[in-house]
Image (cartoon, rainbow, N blue to C red; front, side):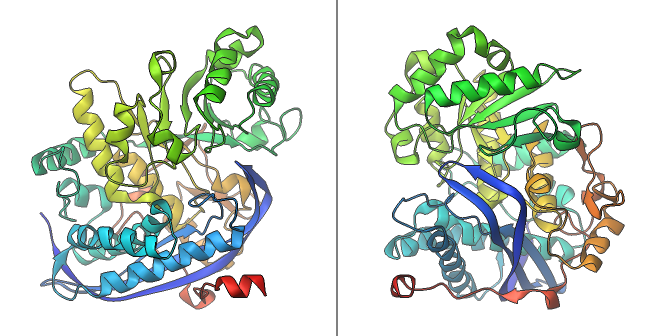
Amino acid sequence: MAQRLKLRDIAFFERPVQFARPFRFGAITINATPQLFVRVEIEVEGRGVAVGASAELLVPKWFDKRPELSPAQTVDGLRRSLEIARGLYLARTGFLTAFDLHASCIGAQVATCATKNIPALAAAYGPAEIDKAILDALLRGVETNFFNGMAGNVAGIDARLSPDLSDGDITRFLDLANQHRSERIAIRHTVGLDDKVEGEGGVADPKENAGARYFKLKLGGDPDADAARLIRIGKELGALPYDYKVTLDGNEQYSDLTALGALVDRLEHDDALKSIFRKLIYIEQPMPRDVTRQSPLGETLRRRHFIIDEADDSYDAWPTAHKLGYGGVSSKSCKGIYKSIVNFTRIAKLDEHGAECFVTGEDLTCQPGLALQQDLALGALLCLEHAERNGHHYVDGFGDAPLAEAQAFAAVHPDLYADAGQGIRLSIHDGDLLTGSLHTTGFATSVHPDWSALARLEQPKSLQEYLA
């Protein structure tokens, strides 16, 4: 049953995160970036005050890949998105459901951000992070966990932003999803463009891949170079003593259908690529988001599974992509938990009629703690079998978080974290993450970060300051 709430405060914090190894995807290599933390205070109608939290990296050059912008400028775009969303949300002063707040703000958020030269995907970041924190507070206020709360639609999700659905579709599939939620989710190990391929520390090294049975291989946009690298990776993965599957991620680097067709042709006909092609599940976001919207895949490409990720920047993005020949859409909590749930409902409804579409779990370097747990819980609700998990791979444990904070998370989520003598790390069980401890009051977390150890969100710089 939907529960109403009134917002009292939204505060933003950040913490620097240094990467343990460079992460290269698309045209960017990340060595460090701040992690955002959101703290909200709400009044739950008839129940009193509750505090909620969320977290996510402020990732450069993913939400906004325009070449004329520096990585720092794209991070500032995310900071502006957050501040704009904060103003819109706090302007709603009465008692509303959590989804009322989201639905009443998202249109104005995208429109306002557009006037500030912030694209739709970056515009959605602000509401996405605020919504997670509000949901955490709401679940704490009504003293229930994420899974039971969503099964009862405590957030009041309805079909006002998705006219192709009915309110009943959403409530039915929320309840059905909860009945079949994932108790364990296999990690999909990311192989970045700068990651080592062969030998010790390479893709087949169990100390590196943590026993993963699924691998996500980044593409660079050049069919010949990508094919040569995939051949090398295929040789290494072929030595694994167990079966495995792969996905390919273009991160918008393939310029058009001609370049994409050349890659697919190599995959289908080059004998040296058979070991990859036979294990391939889908190809993720190969072309730029604007090209994607204008380019039907055609019969040849429709034979393969393609999904959208960066192009999933609005509530109508997935229905549009499906008409263009795409078979799936990614779920990422940084793009919005409610949109993920709506898209899951759409796909479940399509699949009831034999469409064979799917939702995937992708990871924008979710760090251990709030970010990882909330995104993992969302994936479990969506019944995912596997999901990309790369935060543990590119950052050393809890990174720069205070030891006491890491220990607090490990103490109450012992199935997710362990100390094997090198500090607290993500605990991976035969290639899987367990979701049992996520069944706790609140949004998949029993504890919050040490707020005193965080800095207030930096104020974004003006263009003049960057040019100075």
